[in-house]
Length: 323
Image (cartoon, one colour):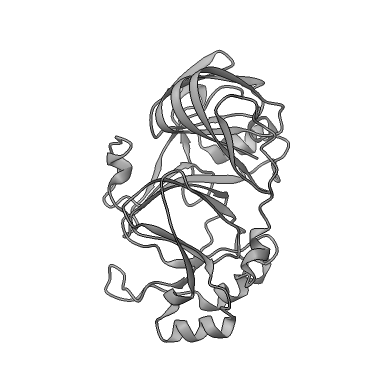
């Protein structure tokens, strides 16, 4: 388990999706609408299937169970379960306002903890994201706004540009605005509590179910305290002296950085974590243990933790995720 792995995308056709996963990344076979592409996933709701090499046709959950730390690294919290879910999101319309449990409060609702980060790949002019509650919003204020359909006024809205990075710890109320194309890294979870749905109806003409009770048990009401889950340490698993490397987010569950690749660079691994790659722009090759995979814009790749070294070559902007 030392060679690069690529996967067949798992597409989700939620009604708020669009067509940019096909047009922006030149993909075929996407549904319409196409809201999400689960790029690297071991979640039962959409497990990834290997597309290349000797493990082609096998699922990521199966490989995680069989190879354990050789695939995932010694930092993984469960040596039989892949710890992250990496996806692309095309929000043609606003997503619902939602909140996910964190490791501290997940037991209150029997949900799976889900801390995540967003990297903005593209956006329409005027697109925004919603990250947390406005100052002074208490449970009583939010409850009243939900009852009269004005919950939007309780949300902190931020405008976005390509390259922006947003950290969304579990417990933080949030929503992705219409027109945003997002690269998301999260804990391996699919627990979402829908708090507010912009007073709209679903495909059946009826309002979609809300999860008010679960949301109120999950919300961390102090935005600043919950944001402190992110710390400022630089990713230890990529040589920060590598030319063109920039750390974006570092938290308990993952590190995400960006490499502006010009030419060739080799990255050593120490067995503590896998490395997940995503080509934002450009073209590159990745070589590990004598096997080379060609990566074009929009492709993802997983380097197992047991690979002592891998080499990237080409000209590309590459997002790099580790534990």
